[in-house]
Length: 86
Ligand SMILES: [Zn+2]
Image (cartoon, rainbow, N blue to C red):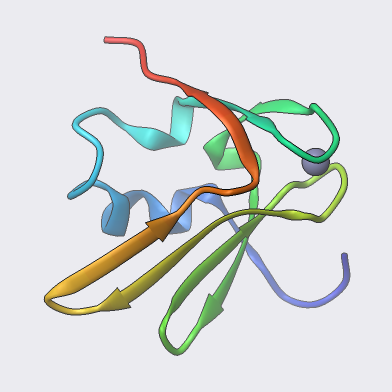
């Protein structure tokens, strides 16, 4: 995938309101290619309304965070699962 993007650390702040634990180290499986990686390795594209997280291996969308304060909407349609370990 070409273009400027950040890594998954860019969404750690906005998602800290959603998840109790640090999401950057959480593992997730891409529903498109089966790649298992921590959030920090995803490609994050900023948009005026939020963030798009893409798989670093296949470039498909993992999750979309729409931030229209005070409402935030998180779609995780490209993640088969996430591992939440205390
Ligand atoms: Zn993938």
